[in-house]
Length: 294
Image (cartoon, rainbow, N blue to C red; front, side, top):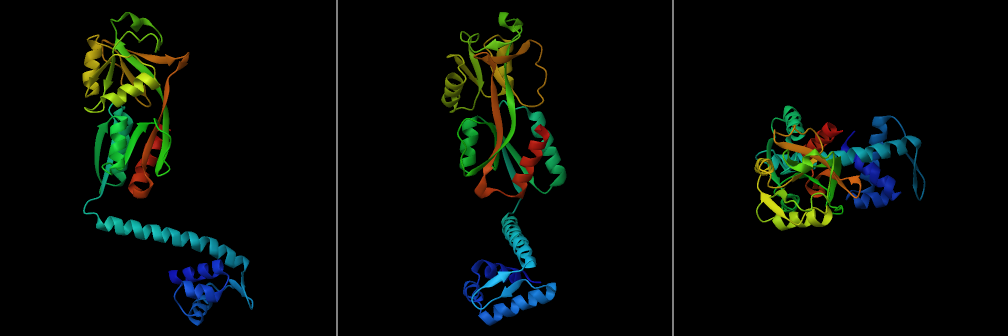
């Protein structure tokens, strides 16, 4: 059995005519008829009932049509992916993650992925939500991990990882460190410390101020380590999301759940990538990451 015979059969089934199918396949009617007879002889079963003006599929033909179409689609995908991989001088996977993201699960996912696909070179970059969004749009990363701040774009896959619980890290010496929970109202008089890349301060400020209702006073740092040094020094509080394993805060810092309007603040995290640029390795890494969180 040849793939071209499967293609001819599918075309005939969809056209309902040998004549029309022959035209679409750029082959003579006698030649396409001969190929279908050879296919039936190979399978030792009748696939078509030939009438004067139309054809009908037998039960075996209907079964063969459904599965042959799926096989050809898979062959097309394999062919395209093989060509793409053949054109790449080096297999690479570029991952973007938030600056305040717990690295434990990400490291675990990378380790599992590399055990399976050691030929793939993995590079990672951290950034703010807006920064990672721009990198993905520009094709500078293959997929990003971030919370949902926009409506879904139909051009991208958005696979949910987990709802995060939002917390506040505050100096242990601060009077509010004794509270079991902290509300956005409690924090209005304090400075909010944000981990943000240079040039993205305003977009992060807008989100935390308008969407989460946090304080109007903001301090900006480039790393989580710098932010926690400021917290220990009682310079302000650090909002942080816990969506997986998070190390116990260092001495001098208290981590307290954040509430708004009487309810815990939660944020939904996703792994996102462009449908047009998807490939086996991106999809496999996303699946590994989802399994770790779930």
